[in-house]
Length: 416
Image 1 (tube, rainbow, N blue to C red):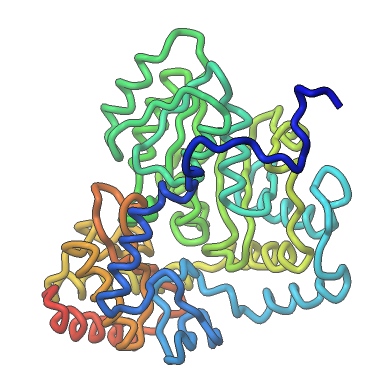
Image 2 (cartoon, rainbow, N blue to C red; image 1 turned 120 degrees about the vertical axis):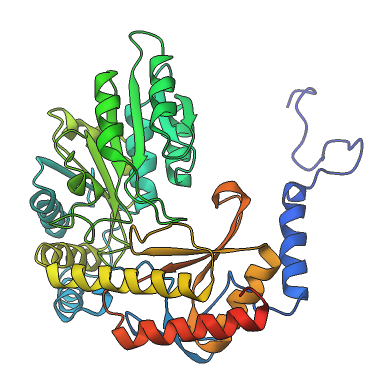
């Protein structure tokens, strides 16, 4: 062996302490330690020992109403959905052990994509293993070095990560600001590839994007448009196709991204499109090519759920009723909410700070109610939120019970 090559059993000489790669997380570690020291239960490691229905579970030993699961349409216990998963598990086994481009495409994956094409009335559908991967894969593949992505500053982490992975130029604009978006688009160099990324419903505050105006501006400036409808699929729009349908722009957008982990009630992600070259994405999209495909039981439950959502008008109407009642009830009690009017199935309750928010979260859990505690940097404007996501299976009585729980907990903590 050459003298210039170090033997494996001879470690390099150290000139000081080895850098601790975890040091960058010290502030977060301290924040969590201080939170737990205040006596609240850990809001980020709740355990559901048993799930009883779409709206109830045993959490940390308590019978608890679920108001933070994104199970908007309550499909997780639908008998047809469960039966489809059980049959696929028995017929095809527990997993595929491969990616979609090798051995990982089963009949169920094709049937799931067929259901998506029918649901959205679009030519192409592509199923990913998670919604995160759908954004990561589509955005990073179509917007690369030299291209520009114009996106809302409050975009989901998966959107930001897709931009970073593709190495495109990222151009953010103020949340839901139509004029700011147009100004950014007009500054992009002539001839550059342009992609505008929007969300139908923004998951922190539950507000919707002004898609009618934004899509027109994007098209007028030569940009392609991708809309993430994770939090509106199944619920918003005449057929549950999302804010793009409600705003009348579904035929003008180039890509719709969604997830199975919200209204569909299982796990996975997808993209639908009418672009004539879309099928090439199956060979060039790395998060699709290099990821194991969803298990047969999962795509079977997803396909069955999607087809049932096509005719779920009654569920959609009841979910709107629940959202309106919770929003008005919390407002009457004196809570500060993220929107003036209910815009989606998400109702965000703004807390004064993280300490009060954690105390309120803990008090609600003691009452028997689970919501999401959301904090910076995930939240806009450094807000601490208690995020409530309603379900079509919440009864009128449960919503009234929830309002009583908020009233008692809010007074005990000093929020109202």
